[in-house]
Amino acid sequence: MASRAGPRAAGTDGSDFQHRERVASHYQMSVALKSEIRKLNIVHLLTWVLMVAQVTVSQLSLVSHKVVASPYQWEYPYLLSIIPTVFSFLALPRNNISYLVISMISAGLFCVAPLIYGSMEMFPVAQQLYRHGKAYRFIFGFSAVTVMYLVIVIAVQVHAWQIYYSKKLLDQWFTSTQDKKKK
Image 1: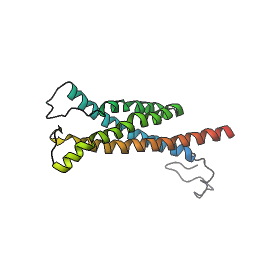
Image 2: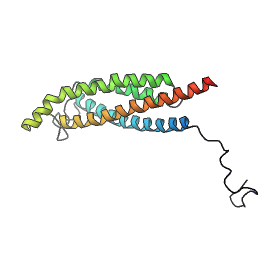
Image 3: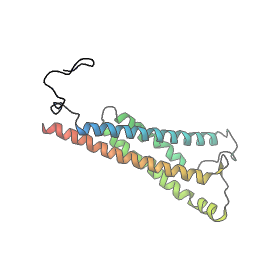
Image 4: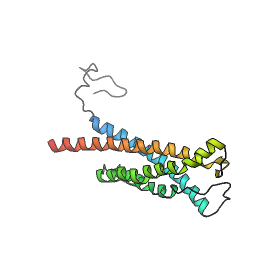
């Protein structure tokens, strides 16, 4: 056995590392996927906080509607998108399969569905902006429809990756569970 300051143990040339234990690949993959899901959850949380701020400021009339436009209808159901993120955060520390499945299903219902509805709801306004160059709702001087379409594009990507990584993580967890049952 070698020490930090002392010589190498007698009889070793450094090639005796093959017998050492390694972390199983599905555990390594699980850690990597959990990290990615946490990052995506944080991005979603930031997006959600901005959406809550816009809805709150508008509903409480804290600033003029010329500064922050009133929310579109799809924004209210999208506020429920915090539910899948909470379940995802709860599922990760203890590898809770049930919570992760609930998170994936509710992500489709509370995240993706309002975004699809929102893109359809705002399409006529975006078309009018494109054809005539007229916008009637603004968020800090920018066209509200442009800002909200940007939010939708980012949110769709975040939720798609969340669902994808969650599915891969479930597969990893099921693989490790099946391996334990075989032994």
